[in-house]
Length: 243
Ligand code: ADP
Ligand code: MG
Image 1 (spheres, rainbow, N blue to C red):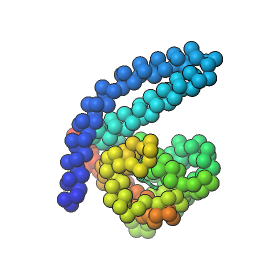
Image 2: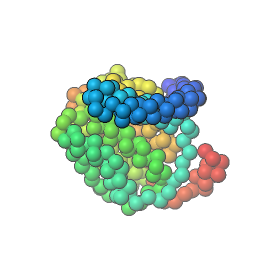
Image 3: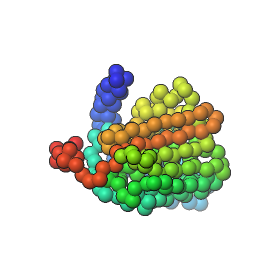
Image 4: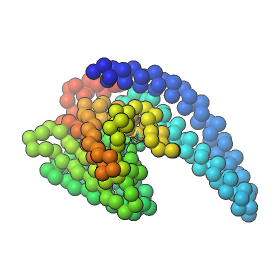
């Protein structure tokens, strides 16, 4: 519990700072990108200079992504839950990363077992979570590997369970304690915000994220989300109060 309280406090202060900085960075970034694009047009016939201009554009895009994630992370999660057809929903999330997976020769296999037809959740937010899990799995997995997505509701349970299993590099014991910390990343161009954002989103759905990982063998990340038949009075109150 102490750990959790500490985490929440750290998140709040980091969040405020991040939101302020991110806003200030966005405008200059868009003019830099404009000029870099101008140079890439101008140096069309000079491969060397063209390459430099293209690197500038790529790096600006990366900064924009980082800033976008920062803002996303800093914003308090406000849910707009809806009734969502589960099959179509999960498939559309997989589609978002299918290009990236195909480029790396990775197959994403989806299975539904005893899964409910539809669930009540915020599709935009949960698709962000799934996207983060899929991208992490793709990044951890070797060329030609498979990622398994299992959607299920354990017998008698009121929870929707979605697990994403990869046969990638795994997570060391030491790192496991930090993967939900904002800015914790082991990647040269990672933001370390994907799982921190995902944690906030799942928590605000009243759910949790579980991890099983063996270094060198792979990782299974499981979302456990309470499935409600409909919006409860409690949800309505939360929604009305803007939480
Ligand atoms: P980022 O992807 O930008 O590094 P995340 O918050 O998404 O940030 O993940 C934090 C860290 O957790 C990653 O840098 C990586 O070390 C570890 N991680 C997350 N998912 C996996 C996975 N499926 N396999 C191996 N390591 C993972
Ligand atoms: Mg990530």
